[in-house]
Length: 158
Image (cartoon, rainbow, N blue to C red; front, top):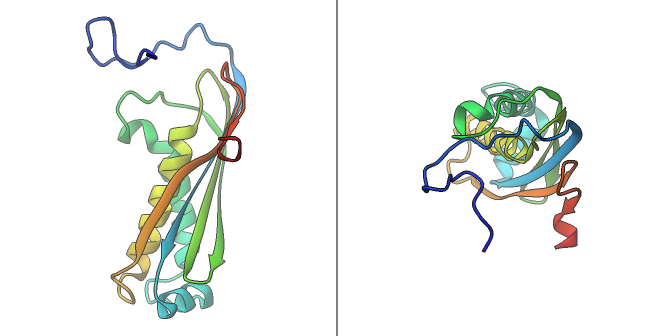
């Protein structure tokens, strides 16, 4: 069985010591989806939601969330992120959100990418809930990661 790295020999939680790890370029991509009514989707696409530009606000929220991940997730290392990009794809009944996080450092950015997607989706919900309170967020997942000792991983390769 693989040893959990966030537990010490006594079973107590601790922050993993990454000081011996080499700095490498690391990148993580995560995605998620929010499904909604046609009215909500049209309002977001056309920019007519009463609270303003939903996607611009959600993009900023996602970028901010990636930067604040160690404040939200216990034992995450504070990272000097060099890039956070949030992209949107309109689908038939919702919006797919993708977050890319890149840095040069001693540990990866998977949690930052998934946090960015989660908060982006939550912000879309908040901005459009007056139109559709029944929106559903789903499929938040890591798509790929590169860099570090474990190298490349992608959901496509699972």
